[in-house]
Amino acid sequence: MNKLRVLFLALISIVVLSACGNNEKVKIGISGTDTTVWDFVAEKAKKEGIDIEIVSFNDYVQPNTALADGDIDANAFQTVAYFDEFIKERDLDLVPIATTNLAPMGIYSNKIKDLSELKDGDTIALPNDVSNQGRALMLLEEAGVIKLVDNYNGLDSIEDAIVENKKKIIFKEVAPAQIPRTLDDVTAGAINNGIASDAGFDIQNDSIFLEDDTATPYVNIIAVRAEDKDDETLNRIAELFQEDDTKQLILDTYGGSLIPTFIPLEDIGW
Image (cartoon, rainbow, N blue to C red; front, side):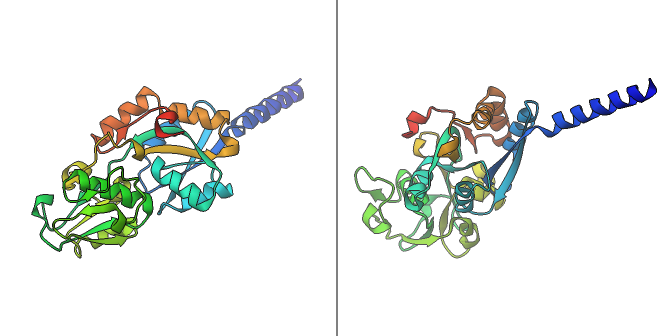
């Protein structure tokens, strides 16, 4: 009888261990080191048997190439404008499955406190990738620094985009992650939210001009391979991200420097 009891307990242990080991594992790529929101979503997912591994990249290229290559299962780091241009240029079969937030781009400077202080011939550093550069140009137009062609598509070169530059501002194209390091050498720079955070900036207080939530082309998305767009686990993760408690966490944690923007994919052209 004792032998049977031992055998029974052993079988139960095997079943329990097997069940614990059957959690579905999902790798999600992000850019930068701030995992606050995804750690929160991962805790919720874990309760449903989904183990999320967050994979951090230090640029805006690898998260998409890693996804296309199957090294990760999804990514969440980019605006829809950047995504659309990137997959077209690289011919990648990726699609968005949900929107997440707006990470406002800002203008930062170590030399001036307001863009009205710009002098003739000053230099502004811009991201050297097409979509973020277009975003920066539109931000500078909103701030009254330049004027762009009518119906600017966000993709034209600096020379083709600008029709008025009264102060003859010089624009220096720089890799996005390097712009914080150039601020001693230029008058100001347009810096993406995540890069600014990693560089130690307080988004709300250190920026001298900041994007607002009307910039819908720059809403961030969760992207997957097209073949996985209907995957139940990945779509459940997207749902967990868009729940009210995640929204509240973003509002409480970032105080407006990250804006939860859960809008339908149709609203961003998908």
